[in-house]
Length: 296
Image (spheres, helix red, strand yellow):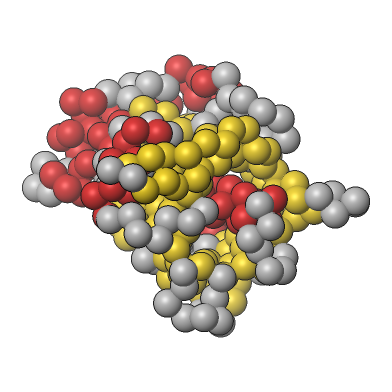
């Protein structure tokens, strides 16, 4: 028998049973790809992380991120939660961690309370903003179960974008945000020529009031009907909004998960750099459960 300890963390919240759930296996060396995927499916959270020795000893760890059905190149709340968990478990040598991931190197800065207790983290997305093309507003309206009139296109049409993992970002009328609900048939036909891409289709809806943003995220074909807090999507949104302005930097206070009963608070920011627009996302986290997975 092989035994692998794990912890669960609620991310982008300062209290248990809010925010986005995450399972972290802090000593995952020896697990196969298939076992990691099976454990992530069994945990049934938006994502589960597996911490492995780094390929470059200058870095803290290699971190692999799995959702219920596939491995992900990068994600926001798993990095915040994993960094926080390693700090709580005493596995962080200092307060600046470097995680090797499929999308690149992710910097994680631990946030502590005045008395030195870990309370959360801030992460840098591994890639500058890339805009990958527009999607028809009518198609996205069908996917999210709203009328076409609810999708706002004055600032931008629904757009595919990434800072490490791809999302479709769509602004909607604030009054309609709570009524959104994913339509599986519409999601499946959104990208008919590429079923694998359709399965990865993730749509972030947002309504903005200055620097305050309310958001919801749906990725039903990968097993996430709705996500309570999506750090990578909101980091991408911060980068997109900055790209539409003439400012050098921007920051946004984002609420998500309210409609799910798991209210989340994120702080996303973006800045212009020589190699493009770079984004960060930060938030609090709390430990919830500890256990051990026993495998044959």
